Amino acid sequence: MKDNPLLLFGYSDACFHIAEQLKTKGWPLVIADNDLIRVEQAQKDGFSAIGLDYTQDEALCEAGIGQHVDCIFCLFEHDSENVFLTISARALAPELKIVAITESQEAEHKLRIAGADHIINPYTMSGRRIAELMRKPEVVDVLDHTLYGRYEINMTQIEITEACALNQKCLSNIDLKKDFDLILLGIVGAEREDPFIFSVQGTDHRLTPGDTLVIIGMPNAIELFKDHLNMPPNHVRTS
Image (cartoon, rainbow, N blue to C red; front, side, top):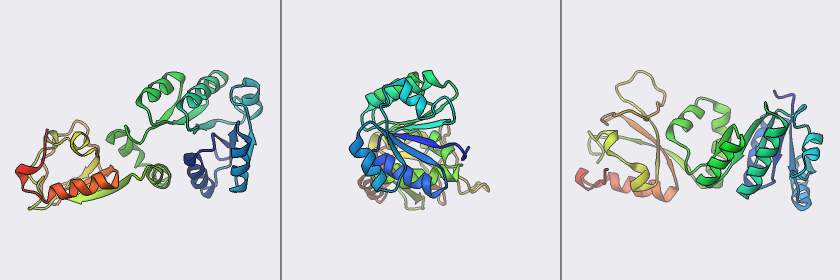
């Protein structure tokens, strides 16, 4: 509900960009941090911000958790803080929607156990999850301007041609994550009337000219992959 404010905890770089995008879309939000210097910086950047000790249940309740706040973002730079906050907030409000960010697979597991509804880890997000998110334009826009921008992760489309090294290759024989540190988000099949990207999980599609791969990864990894596509087919590494 846009009538209820979103609480964004931890004024990190990710928090700044997420808050900026949400604000432009008309979402009422308040940034909360236990560091008054970061609170002042958030206010200077034009956001409503409060000093709040997230380790105290009373402070969380006073901020509206369990009452008029129905969604929070855990955006501290340290995973331990996000895990602690998730546990505390979930105990206070079972119906609260909790979104947390992490760069650690171990912390991702802990956050899930702690009760986070959505965990954002740009290095381990599966193609299926991202494909599902892409069906929601507002979420895609936030991802594009925040996570991809923060981690310098790009999204690119690569069309399969007759001369392409992947022409006639099956997806089951290609491991982009292992060989190039890239995630295959999906594919637009040339023979399909449906123009939308579909998830490739569990799909053994044979690539043919006109197919388009949608890939995300670091810019240098994408360029390396493109260089490999210019090699003869037997030089492209497959699993």
